Image (cartoon, rainbow, N blue to C red; front, side, top):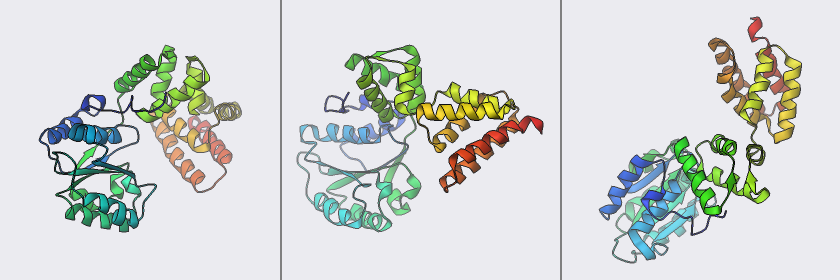
Amino acid sequence: MIWTEKYRPHTFDDVRGQDEIVRKVKAFVQQGNMPHLLFTGPAGVGKTSLSLVIAHTLFGKEWRENLLELNASDERGIDVVRNTVKDFARTRAIGSVPFKIIHLDECDALTREAQQALRRTMENYTQTCRFILSANYASKILDPIQSRCAVFKFKPLDEKYVRDVIHHIAREEHLSIVPSAENALVVVAEGDARRLQNVLQTCAAVASEITEELVFSMASVARPQDIKNVLQLAVDGDFFKARDSLIKVMQTYGLSGIDVIKAIQKAIWDISLETRAKVSLIDRCGEIEFRIVEGSDEFIQLEALLAHASILKMK
């Protein structure tokens, strides 16, 4: 499955899981006018898709001529704002709509100087251009820019919508997905439709039938039950068996230390342990992750975490 024009969203109904945002943006478009927009939220939840839908709805067949798409993580300096953005913004739109659209994706990667220049450009060319800014982290966008935009905060897709995407792709691409694999895809996606599509495409290229084991293997994610078993062994006091099991899981799925820490953090709430001990483990996970990020040996740190879990019941 390849993301082609066949799969690009063209209507507001194609954007799933963000009903309230879609309703408000659709009202802007139906009036033939809209403010500058700022879309924030995690990856793969529909920010870019909604931007394309806005362009398709407003401009019809002339949407390509009236839309400038830029990825700010590729061109993040002040020159792209002074040259590319300003040159496009100062020209009039083609067609009946009085403005063009500039979509700046991942604009939280723009330097501070580029954002200052962008602020002035947004002010000066409001008559001929509207900006749609997409960002994963709103805190990295200057307040003066946020105050000039209508801000919409996207959320990760609910399980229902993730399953809808799975069923749609399976139907269009004639994929055979076993029920346990569908559950695995929901776990792996974590509300990210783009990640879901990439994992499905990889799995479909490897085997004709998509299974649970294949999904976790291709996504380089351990089965939650495997991580839970390792953690339960440690909590039960069998440190050495827990360590050996963890090494086996890491080798099987090719996990890094950070991957393991995040998986353990999710599995903690499913093991048999009193609440205070679970909170203590969560606290230790944060400390271990910080140490690994700062350059400590990940195997030593993971062993330290298992050792801490092994002595919890002794306290």
